[in-house]
Image (tube, rainbow, N blue to C red; front, side, top):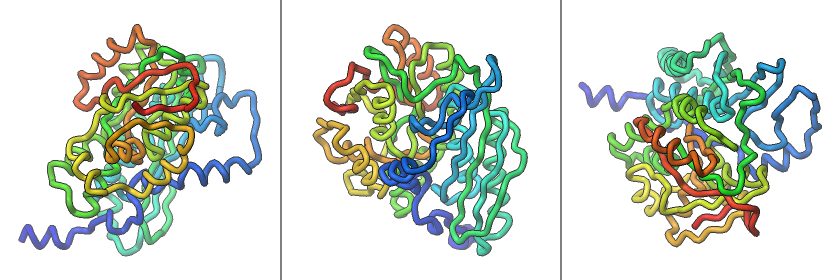
Length: 349
């Protein structure tokens, strides 16, 4: 009877043309389109689209600024409740990447008629539980019919205008810390191909569903020169945004990269998501790679879903911060450093 139940279970990933943040429009196309749109200016807009930062920040007064963000994507896992958790954690992450605290969230839902209301309920329950864990309030949202399910959140958070983190501002000598291991795009590709073990599925789901709240709470006790979350544009793509915005070079030491167990095997088999190739094309001539293994090079362009924070921290504080972060059940590690601008914006050693 248990086998029959499994057979009849809806596999959400089979309804998705791309998984999670791998569904993002490529950064190259996006840059071409956004560059042609009208520019909005307002002295109270502290962070807009110009620096490709994680969220918009609008100043209310000298003590308070609002962080606004929206993120949603197709199923990255088959379990509806877990999908809801991961999508919500990913959307909330943009607020944490600015050093803020989420306060208000709205659901964004596209849902096919062929799936029952109990599936939608589980997706929304997963999202609600993550919003509750974040200490924010979920206050409704918007739904439409669509042949492909999609779910995420619009999130508003608070931050002190003088204490927000930006994806630029890294200084030469800073140490780079990544708070989650890499490779979820590759593992999710293996899951969609029905090649991953149950243990691997549970491992990557736990990583994606982990709120960046806990890393932000720890990091906020230290000096953070720059921060971004590593999501669909990959470690290489988000590092490039930080490097260009900071007018510095990020040097990433490949032997130090934290990698989810099982990723190397699938990467060597060629289970690379399409988004990785778009990310590689976007990074192009501004990234230099000295990585010898092809699978490792694919990894640094792998689109991450609900990935970790990339922090640029003064060298004198980096070890203490990394040690404190290592007390979390999920952690990445120190992965490189920042130099004055070299010929390339990002260098993988």
